[in-house]
Length: 75
Image (cartoon, rainbow, N blue to C red):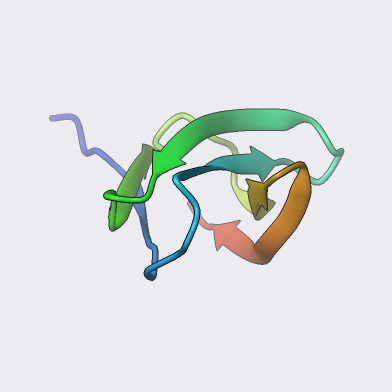
């Protein structure tokens, strides 16, 4: 039986047409990137194959960080 682990993000209304969601490991390696359109209120990321540990989630607009958060994935 396979269990899917998903990380859900909820966005709030924003004024831009789109932004880029980036996720980095603790070594600074970008492991995920996705354009998020203004109409998207939720983004699901499959983390089932990721190693346990801390990751940095970053929302980028106009080449600048609009927001960031650290998350921990546990086994």
